[in-house]
Amino acid sequence: MFENLSGRLSDAVRNLSGRGRLTEANIKDTLRQVRLTLLEADVALPVVKTFIERIRIRALGEEVGKSLTPGQALVKIIHAELVRILGNESIPLDFKVQPPAVIMLAGLQGAGKTTTAAKLGKRLIEKDKKRVMFVSVDVHRPAAILQLQVLAAEVGALHVDSDANEKPVHIVKRALNEAARSHVDVLIVDTAGRLHVDEELMQEAKEVHSEVKPNETLFVVDSMAGQDAVNAAAIFDQALPLTGIILTKADGDARGGVALSVREVTGKPIRFIGVGEKLNALEVLHPDRMASRILGMGDVLTLVEEIEQKISKDKTEKLAKKLKKGRGFDLADLRDQLLQMMNMGGLASMLEKFPIPGNVNSASLRDAGNEKKIIRQIAIINSMTPGERQYPKVINGSRKRRIALGAGQEIQDVNRLLKQHLQMEKMMKKMSKGGMKKMMRGMPGGKIPPGFG
Image (cartoon, rainbow, N blue to C red):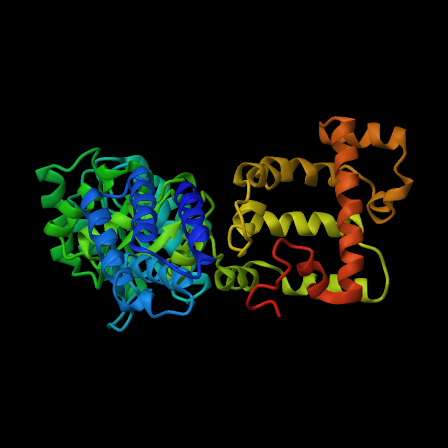
């Protein structure tokens, strides 16, 4: 997400940061670049105008003129205004109510409400240790009811059956009673959607809201829908007392305009963003961290949090002890690393959170961290014998043919994997001798990001 926006804004900001003196012409030229970048990213025109005007007023005032580093001062202003447009601070879900707390999800058809319900439920179960129940009132689409039932079983949530012949109000009333009897902490209500906003949809959403009186009413919006998504959010906000927004399919949106528009247009905070198809691919939106990512400054805090949540501590400690004792990094270790990389969303997802100076070729990164490619590499390692994984040097030509055949791959693929392992083994040896610092010095910029000292 924000790939195009981040690249262009980073360039504009980089041109300023080294300047010892800024003129009105410099500022005007930079703001023109920023304006064009935002419009190309599909940010709503009124939002762009307001954003640029705020920066211009602050930049032409004393804030930049009296600064010893005016270029950096202007960068700081742009960052601050991005934080402001994204909502200043992340707002946690409100559970300060008598259980069950009710979360109602509203939105248009195809925005990803049902999958988002499952992602949110999984997060609440695993991270917040909540007892969660799902109910679908999408009586117009029986497949949605079945889908939610399947997803409930997958994430370990309870599910209330609903029937296409029942009225949505009756379904939620029954669900509330069932949630209370089952001592549920959170009831997530998945409402019906339409391909466009109509009177019937809005009336049904109002009736369901009136019955359940949710303490959180979240509008689920497809970030790839552009200005249509922003318009729909504004209409829903007028009809329902929305408490927040969830952006879906953010991993497929390289522009990021919806994220910057929807908060400003509705005045409601973006609470979560969906960053992939997997059920753990739901992130809390932290405005300050997101603004840093947009400006190419990285987001090390989120990366550290993801590592703590998704990386196996036992396996990491086991590998560290193994390397410390001088034992090699074998192919079984590489397989563990590949599996953990997949769990983190791939190499591209990880590296975009690093504050790496200059433009990183995200297309090549995405290719390097491509999930299908990683799956093929794991298949090759699984096709080896335990002895071959432990001692890769014994893998000769005939063994390579057997391994390739067993994994359904080519011999060249086996050779590439062995070469990759050799490179990682060398890197691991360096890390075991000099720690993380030596490896970080080899990165562009030669500095260790905050949090990795």
